[in-house]
Image (cartoon, rainbow, N blue to C red; front, side):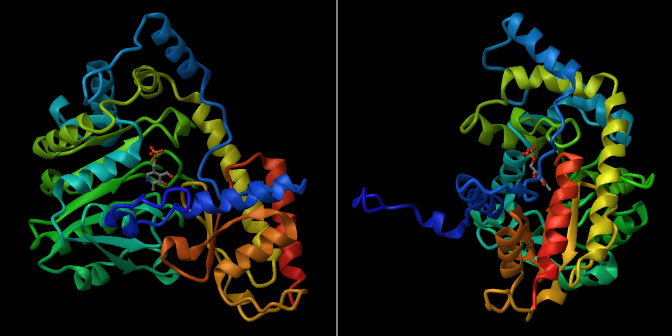
Length: 405
Ligand SMILES: Cc1ncc(COP(=O)(O)O)c(C=O)c1O
């Protein structure tokens, strides 16, 4: 600002916080610059390489000259692949004008809100929640209404709490299963119970953020609202993408399916912002969605092993506790046992932010405080790093907890 005394930011900027995950990464980079070993367990990104057949499809697209603008909603072949994926894997039938591809799931969620939320409309967000939903609701001139969930209900929104949160201003209910940050998976029965509460509110739309669909453990099945409750399909938007399941975060490719007028409005927004997802990423996503998925079993076995490493270490860490995550690649750790304890340098730990700062200082391991996800005192740990690195990080966390007075 000092360099630009005349630069005035728009009021909407005051409604946004910088992503807390980016903040912790910055602190980690600072420690790394001091030549300390740092391990970032804050980032929601798998360490696996994008599968080779997907990378090859991208090369082939470049060689074929598919390097130009595509239609805004995505190439026809990609939308057909998405249509077939939704039909074959989720029992959902959509026409091509009910499907849009975009540069990640993230901008599509924002577009869905931007296209539908009027000033003051309420967006119901069960907490703990992905960091971006409340800011996106505010960016769209809406009011985030946080629906608190707790460990006692396995971090899932209950029908009673949803009923208490609904008002005439409610516009959206955001569902995210498997959940970031808790890993909780909503069952078909639980979705039906929520649908019954929504029945008398025909203006409330349901955003089903299914981005972690494929990352589930212990053979748990996946369910999404429009599949379980076809009567609600006309007011559901399914959000998904290739970032998590195919380790393609950097390719920026997500998709949405929902009622044609909403998808059309999202297309209009995209036509005036990003235009279309990268043509090369679109070709790669066709291969990801259409071709064999043998690699996924191996990935899930590795992630499951890491999940156990995390849970076993948390049991050994005084002051920490964690339930068994059902999906995604996060552990949501209760650190209430460390609040009020003393750092060796005599600072008293008061918040989950203080716990994360202590663990970072003592062991070089970066975790995200639960405050970023709307519940405290918790820590989110992403076990998406190399297994041996994870083992070292977990030992560092255990040692850091033991050093507290
Ligand atoms: C719950 C949730 N939704 C959406 C996204 C964004 O996915 P994409 O990389 O496709 O934009 C993330 C990424 O962390 C996420 O955790």
